[in-house]
Length: 120
Image (cartoon, rainbow, N blue to C red; front, side, top):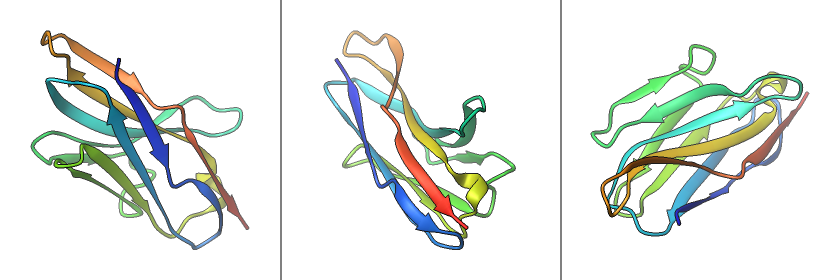
């Protein structure tokens, strides 16, 4: 069973930066897309950024230019570099990986979430 381990969240002052990391454990045939979502208090979970196996990226308009998603294929790790953080970026950030199992079934898995708190 594939699980995701996220890290890098924490408390930061407005204007600061954080880098989130997410790595899967378990056996997969291949990884397709790796992405980040966030859920602010009282709001629905929303898309933040995604990176495909080929390295193509896509960002939510709200974070475009502020966040950079990247991946280390050798480590199967995805990163989210967040700069110029604002209090409205406060949320639980979730990693999601879309992959194919050893049996070649398309599957997805979510991380447990990491809390990012931006103080004003």
